[in-house]
Image 1: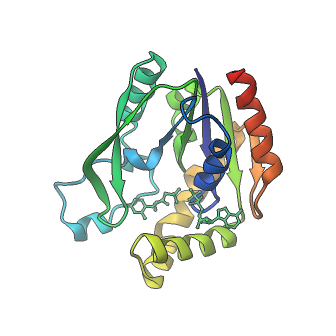
Image 2: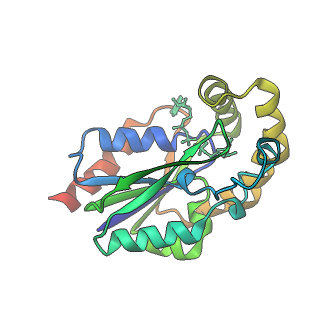
Image 3: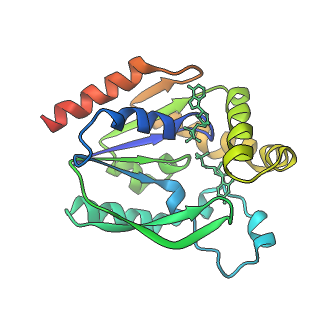
Length: 202
Ligand SMILES: Nc1ncnc2c1ncn2[C@@H]1O[C@H](COP(=O)(O)OP(=O)(O)O)[C@@H](O)[C@H]1O
Ligand SMILES: O=c1ccn([C@@H]2O[C@H](COP(=O)(O)O)[C@@H](O)[C@H]2O)c(=O)[nH]1
C-alpha cells in the first residue's frame, strides 16, 4: 500500500486537489481518508459550547483513532470512517465503510503535525496558497456550504485560524517532499502526483 499525506492550511485546496487526482484513476484502486472525519466526538457538549472549540489545534483531533484506522487499512482490513457535520460541529451517527486500497490518500490541515502518522506516509505533500487567498475561499465556502456568516468566519480567522496556522500548520511544510503552489489551479502538479500513483498501480 502507498500512503500519501496531503496537508496545507484551510482553504488551500486540499480537497479539490485530492478530487482532481482521483478523478481520472480507477475507483477501486485509490481510497481517501479525511482528517475532518476524525474530529473528536463532542456530543457531551451543547451546540453553543461546541462553537467555542478551537478546531485548528491538534488536540481537537482524535489522532489515536486515525492512527488505528491507518494501521488497520495497512493490514488489508476495512474501517468505518466517521462522518463529520460542519453544521452541527460534531460527528454524526453515520460511518463510511472504507476499504483498503493500493493507494490511500490522507488529507487534512494537521496530519503532518503528528510524528507517528507522518512516518506512515510514503509521500508527504503540502498544498500552499497565500493566506488572503485562503481566507477568501474559506469565507465563500463556509457561508455557502457550512452554514456560517461573515462575522463568524472573520472572528474565527482572527482568534484561531491564523494563530494556529502559524503555530502548527505552516511549520509542517518542512516535512513535505512536494509543495504544490495552489494560488491558481495547478494541473501540472496534479498530473505529476497522478503519474506517481499510476506507477504504483501498474
Ligand atoms: N486553485 C484554486 N483556485 C480557486 N479556488 C479554489 C482553488 N482550489 C480550491 N478552490 C476553492 O476554494 C474552496 C476551498 O477549497 P478546498 O479544496 O475545500 O480547500 P481545503 O480542503 O484545503 O480546505 C472551495 O470552494 C474550492 O472550490
Ligand atoms: O466543526 C468544525 C470543525 C472544523 N472546522 C474548520 O474546518 C477546517 C478544516 O477543514 P478544511 O476543509 O481543511 O478547511 C479548520 O480550519 C476548522 O476551523 C469548522 O469550521 N467547524
